Length: 247
Image (cartoon, rainbow, N blue to C red):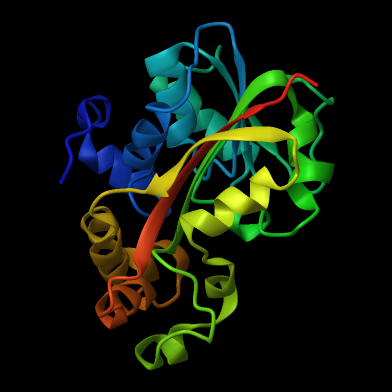
């Protein structure tokens, strides 16, 4: 698997104590190859979960981060930010994706790691809500679980019993490029599948199989079942970066 030098600086036990999906620091470091963040910029970390991506952004790039999540309380995240020593750069916010408390064009960049798929497949969300948060010339970046190809005639039989709930928001890189590109609001600067997605995904699947009951009180075998059932190699982790047009 590709080496991620910035991620390797962070203790793996800390990552595992706070991750909520495939290693988010790896996904973020991959995305950052296509974004230009500098100290002083204001960055929205949308769907930050337990905030480790926000810690990473503050420490590695010196940006001011608004760590926005619905599922994890702002108070809990603040404790993590204080412990990480980034409380002066990272501000925890508890808000739903359609009710964000930010002014239009407030951010220099908006980033989402393994979250945007939950709300961003809606045709109107990007043009009417999300894109307005970033100033002209600003940047967007997402990494989402997805597919190497679209299932035009339904999913394969091997995945049929698993194709429920959020799985309907899994799409290909080409789909995501069209989804943002057709709005005319941004120029998509990168859109592709990360190399070896199962290699990145599997450690999380194995961890959740062992720990999910302890952490969330529910079965944690879904990711393992999905990766094992994907005999066609369709599982993907899609990276997309874009820049907002100036006019």
